[in-house]
Image (cartoon, rainbow, N blue to C red; front, side, top):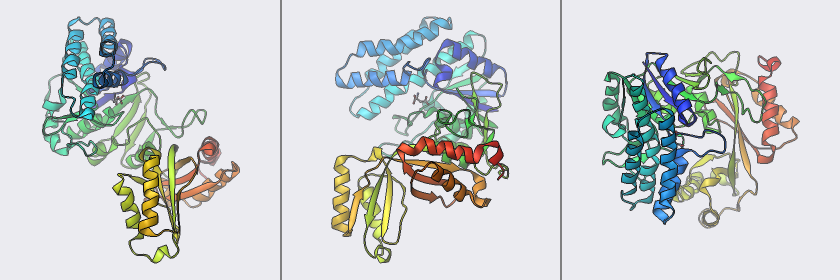
Length: 456
Ligand code: ASP
């Protein structure tokens, strides 16, 4: 039994939804279909989720609710018309949105979640209606009744595996189950959405709960590529990779698959396949437990920007018990999560994503480190950092990889600001100046992926 998830571009229009139906029809083991909200039909188009965020903000801050509501209903209306569905479905959607707009605005973030979730919820209803319209038995599954449980606020939203037992019953359905992605309910019946792109998480959760043989994640590319196609022309497609490799690549900017989506599938060893709705014949990329990495120790090169470095120096830091803990405690007090902490004997740097930093908390952090840790020097480095990540399970057993990578970077005449080899040795991270990012990726790609170098 397969669970398949279709992303926003796969369900953006009637034409795309017809492709989805063909894909589901072509394989009788495709029983559960998880859907996103309609995404972009062309590059300047707006995703329904973004239209819904505009609607929620209009309702919260006195904006033009009418226009915002019509923009959303209009998208569904045009899909329903093109699918030749009756007007009733459009009325159901309009009523649903009006009902959501009347819910409490006491907690703005929860109100926005309630509105945002309408994107996938109504799309699932519409797609289930279309299946039935063309004579294929299908039903919409409501995440609340089906048991997609999430934790309470204010903690970061995460699914609770306690819901699995109930979710497992989805496999008893007679026909196709159409399940909306992106949101779940807390035990107190509060709706919460996952982070953006979170329908991948729903798909993985449902696949894990029903112990699917395969979780197929349909998107708009034939496979995952070894480097960003916008930087490296025609990069190599990845046929097979491990969960850990995908996790590392997703963390560092591979947006094909949400980085939080792997965990449920991984924990129940459900293999994942990334496939293309527009070219379902292409085999896609399989994500599995193990792969033979002897021929290709490095599987991909990712890069992510938007990092800052906090530099702290204090003479005899290495002998001061608890220095690191107290430094990180100051960051914790500001609710800041850190990415890397490269250190020397008397200095330590903390690499932080810019989204956690404001002018205000930067000053506060510096002052506290000066006052409480009596540091000799503390400052945020004045540079836009990028992290370039080389990923591959085979790196652990291959000698000379770091030398090859560093030599490739040297050829671009760029400086390496930081090197971090994760303890698992699945990734090697280079902190570099953002301005050098693209030329470094191209050089690393040449070194590790050009045919002649593959087996070196
Ligand atoms: N519709 C949501 C978004 O645009 C979730 C998803 O598509 O996965 O982020």
